[in-house]
Length: 288
Length: 167
Image (cartoon, each protein chain N blue to C red):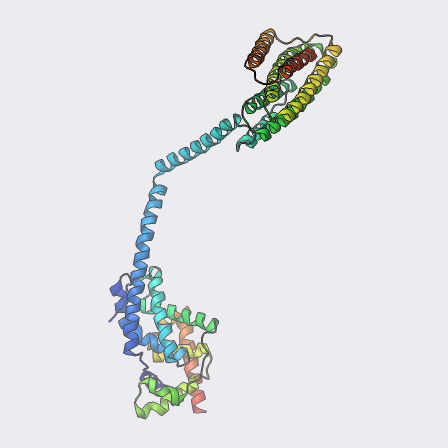
């Protein structure tokens, strides 16, 4: 067979698809086109939206600034809110985490001692507030928190004692810090005494009152010991600053008045109230 | 009919009316003379063409050559996935589908039987050149070869077919 014959025969080969297939395929292609155009329209709408964001750099800048600002504001808000969080509340761990960060960032031992004392104030106030409520479990937690913070304060005072060796100028500087701390310790003892009295008057809180008594004794003893060490090694006398002292006296008088009023109203047992005042005074004397 | 754009529903319809039979013929011979399979594959080729319409560049290719490239690639993919079991031409089964005159039946059957004895690439160029009646330049673009190489490939393939048939 010659090439020309082959060509001719090949051209004769003419298989054709069925007409039914052609009609079905045309319908199918129509639906494919419809689907693709529908998708394109919905995509186009989305694309237009995103393009408008991408194209408008002014808008983009505003969104970026707003996002950063909002994030910062939310974070600040959470940190601020956590500061007043009570033990057992959702933000309390945040409060403790923030404290830990500040603790790490406060390198100067004098500043650090002041900071630990501020936290101690916070823990004591939290306990006081909690004692006004009925949540016995959280009161126990608060007492534990006070005890843990007390250990930190004691550790910082110990660190300060080591620092002052052979440096009287520094010792003088530390004396001022010590005076302030002593006043704060005194205040704390008074507030803790008030809390203890309240717990003793409450039914079912005798165990917590006993626990707080133990913590107060330990606080008084350990802080007194640190202050005594300082005085012995420097020859300087630590005295709680006057303003704080007066404030302490006012608190003490107020406590005694409250207890007296409680007695007159017949609340609680007078013997326990008197014991509470005596314990409170004992704590103060220990500090001095 | 000759169109060179694929932007609308009407363009696709026109393309289908223009090329569904040549493409079906190409696929039918390449996929082992299986009518149903050829119809399915041909339909898929037009769908693919619509999906890839944005890649068609009239300044680089004609729409006809472009859709043959799609068809060729689709067949290669289908072979690769082993969706096609290639059968040799069987006169008794397939000759009626070829729409040839009774007097030519024997000769065409003989050609197709021998065509199946060639390598797939040789068979491909013969189908494109003689069955599809495409220009050498167009075949070269479909295969991605130079015009001269394509010309040589076609010449060797047809020479081999003639040799086999005359043996």
